[in-house]
Image 1 (tube, rainbow, N blue to C red):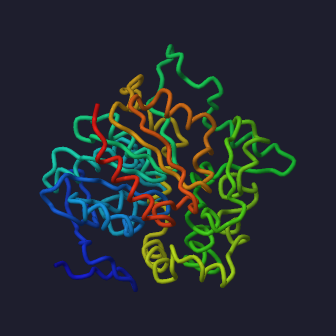
Image 2 (cartoon, rainbow, N blue to C red):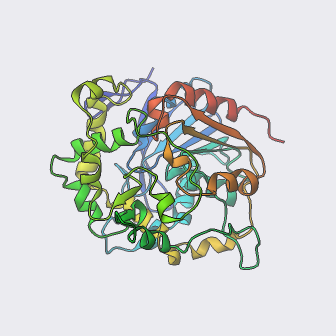
Length: 382
């Protein structure tokens, strides 16, 4: 029997082990691990601003079914070290292919040559998607969560490129011309001031993260998402301000306006104050720049040119998409949800929009998510 792992002021389930593993990619990776080390592997990849800790309520259910579950703090996050988080540091280390190498190196470090299922939430979703696209021999099943995966890039003559795909910077520029000037959060996250705005929020990191998590959860009444018809600025502005921000505001001010009252916080049993303190401690120590580096790569085409090697490739392993029914992330990139099903994933097994969950679906409704994951990992490979 494993002793319970202390994590801040909380105690993780006794089945979970906290490990540090050095990999060939130069990282010392902090991993939450559970289950039989000789069992088939499941890899869980978190997003922003999250940690391996975000999977704490899902890991035990998967491990109980005989799987060896690995949930790392990804490059740029938490207790994993070996990455450079300076704004003026080398961004090459945060290319998508670096994250895929990290995933492959981590499972190899634990002795696995195949992974029964790779699962990614938020930014972890494209990491999981690319892992399955590039190495389907290793990653045998795929679950994408909260961020639909559009697949690989198109060659110039590939007619499958979405006809309304925007210029990388055109969306943000167009939003600023609205009568109420706006900006896109991805481009804001790519600026030099974004880290300091959140890290040094007036009421502290814990208060910032409480407001941020609340604003994107099912607890916030404005999260009633619907498909977004196009990239036109007046259409994009239908989304909440955590995605389409007021042009003159940072993210700290944006979410502070939606800070939940004490009664609402008391009802948010999916994220207690002690659990929130874990995130506040980790981000209070490191800041947010490590996670923001990936947004900078995503808004600069120079850092995705290596992905052209896989132009025209599809994800051919069994794939599934999970999101909260109250998550705008499902629709924030017009056409991507449809492209994922029709073109990117050739063995797509379905979409699950979980009631009672917003963006943090594996934390807000962990039992439902665990059930869906177990169904998918046990599905037949055609």
